[in-house]
Amino acid sequence: MTRVLLIGNGAREHAIAEAIMRSQQNPVLYAFMKTNNPGIAALADGVRLGRYDDLRAITEFARESGIDFAFVGPEDPLSNGVVDALTARGIPAVGPTRSLARLETSKSFTRNLVEKYGIAGNPRFRNFPSLDGIAGFVDELNDIVLKPDGLTGGKGVLVQGDHFQTKQEAMDLCRDILSVHPSVTIEEKLEGEEFSLQCLCDGFTVVATPPVQDHKRRFAGDRGPNTGGMGSYSDANHLLPFLDASAVAEGLEITRKVAEALRVETGVPYKGVLYGGFMTTRAGVRLIEYNARFGDPEAMNILPLLETDFIEVSRAIIEGRLDSLDVKFANKATVCKYVVPKGYGLAEGSSGDASLSSRIEIGDTKGARLYYSSVDKRADGLYMTSSRAIGVVGIADDLDAAERMAESAAGAIGGPVDHRPDIGSRELIQKRVDHMKRLTNT
Image (cartoon, rainbow, N blue to C red):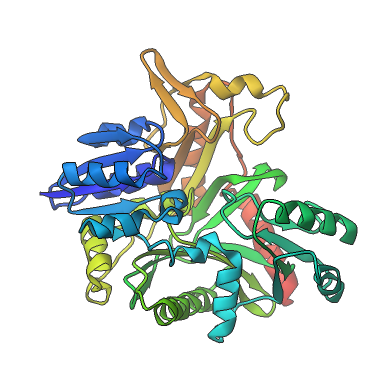
């Protein structure tokens, strides 16, 4: 019997919980959640609700439950130092310490680390703690990207041409960012296609999971505001239609060198998930950012494909023996589409506001996986809250079949809901392929 504490309450954590419970090692699951996720609660023997900055409550719950190890899902408890607190109580965890989690919580830390250790992948960049020097650096670049230093829920990156147009607008945005954050990172704007490479790391060995492409924009055709992610897909050959094996190898090599640099820089091995956001460009693979945990929605693409026992993978991370484990994923394609309230991502006062607390009905989803996110289970059914409601995942032998499964299941969820019907579609994927062909003149 293995007692596991899962920290987190989103669809990503629902997918992690499912992977834990598939283990052959008699798992007993306990969950510490900010809000009650009915999917996780249905799998757990014990649930405790509380804040992710209440480290005493988390560690006490772990101690009372006789936990063998903890798995940390979201970024907030990592940035609050939950792994440090658990370790101090003798409870091992899959997840980096607070210092190592700076890889996600501090854009400047990551850029400087990559530069210091001569690791490939950085664009041109500079970190600014004040407005001094920003105007001159902006003049040196064509188009730019602004990144606040700190957690922004995946929505803080501002791109010229999308979120602002002129140099003066950039200066005004930098002023706003610096009023809230300790610094702002300004980078050259890259052109290419993004991909997510989520890697498992025990501090010495780095193992890649299948690459995934996320879709941040709220509406079909990559229109509308940025969100936490409206859906994602992965391909059966563990590449992507626009991405070849050499690009994946570049991303993995960057991540391996970053893991080594972290160990040398801090003296502590990184144990957890190193999720690199990369862009494949005309000049090769470039690093956009790192996250210190699985992606949401990307975790829902890769965890259902994991054939190796998840508890064994977790123990190998904790014990520093990933090199002895053969981590395998099924050769299946996946498409994840988030079902969201109609008002999700829109300004307050929009016509979709009423959808944020509405009841939803789940019809015949025909074999698709459902992962609950921001929903509330009441006596008379499921209700949406303020954010993404349900991640719907189709798994099949090829992308076309996986997309059809996900689209059918998303359409079977009734209520004032919406989703992006184009995610995983042949038309949208072909646009990605054509974009890369134009860039590389192939």
